[in-house]
Length: 634
Ligand code: WTA
Image (cartoon, rainbow, N blue to C red):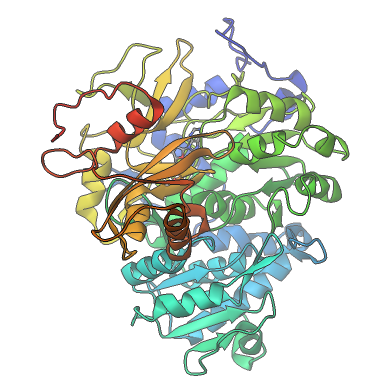
């Protein structure tokens, strides 16, 4: 066994406990890493063989048309067959698939795999009855309730492509995503509960679809029970539909090509509107199944809790698909960590005997502020593994998480990955020595590199652009409807290498340390937002001529949005106007995108070609050198 490497590692290191190593799904890290390195296709074929296929693939990896890679070519499957149907033939039929608790703690629901299947069939029958066919897009805009899982699986089951929009986004974001995807059907709820208050999802949908002629039907789940507008020609209560004969009975799981699309998920990138990342059934299925099994060591006796919202990729891969592909028991919580009190999560861990907790650094930092007394009130002894995702975790937060939540027993899997990668890319497994703040090394079969501007590898310890060198099964296949942008964005700076958009450094032990985004993406509380989206929300206000948004370090959120606004003639900056603009962004784009601060300026630094230099704004705000300003127009 060579998991704890023979040479002592540099810096502060947490070595794995032998008892964890002895029972881990990955025992011999080095051997698996070597196998995957030497025989990438063989490694992934073996993983794929653990799942069921209607027809076996002819070729594991087709790289004849780079960067349009294909995986498991010729194979026929459906991710739902493996996430659900497969388990119904075994004892897992009666196993709990999903445990759910409402924000106020008054509602608890549990679903066995059998029951999830029943619900998914209902949803699939209804979605079909709405005229949705294979390949059609369906927009899902739902709170963190079991129905979002059922609706997603139902789409996949019939070969429709789901496009989930995070229910913390608002009108403009939703409208843009519906429009771009040309969805015929939108699935939403009357509202969601956010810290005891109703967030008006249906109202937002009504507003958004006014400008989306593709939408023929809207299915509405009753969640809050307050009154909402129902247009009888277009809107249907789910509970009314579900009572119709058409909803009952089995809906067959469509046999699909491995490369058939499973979903699109919009995410922010460099300038411009959010792009629709496309994932497929076969490769994505094998990738998320394998990474969850190896990295979080999922076993039948576990109770897994991924706190992410299904509206983000973490929810897609590791709340919905990954756990069910592994036949795991998952917990889903409607609310957030501190409402009504900062012990809300620890109460859940205790109440449901959570064994593995996967969350974001922002949540940990937020909870840290309330002190140890809150978690210490609860029995957290069921926990055996912890996880982190979404942004770099600062060593203090890592250590607090390890000591106070994990009681020093639970290794922390700091998983680096992206909407685009679909699965963990740089990540520990429970048998790997950990360094607080590092995601350790690339997953099996992957190689990462840090490059300078010209594409040369930088020396260990120096910062540069993070790239991935080898294809992986859950990789995005393209940007939906924009192959050219796919190539330009990810594969052009360094041909043949995937550009992650992050800066990072590697230490002499080969451990990677992520620093942050190099593009116009701001990670706010782990949520991925684009400066362009925030700026266009700002300029949609009549007083605003131009705007620039940047992220500045924030103790809890990681980054906070600061906006610089140039007003139109006849308007003057005031505290009231700043507040009005913050509200405006919140209403148009979503509360998550509300700037912390608005500054009125009479000039924005621009390049001679007219591009706003956010880098310069950021440097000025932080009192740092402005760097290369030769292109500055001033
Ligand atoms: C950041 C979320 C440091 C990174 C799964 C990446 C991280 C972006 C980590 C993708 C981590 C994610 N350590 N940074 N463990 N995980 N990131 O698409 O900047 O919402 O490029 O996917 O989050 O964000 P996305």
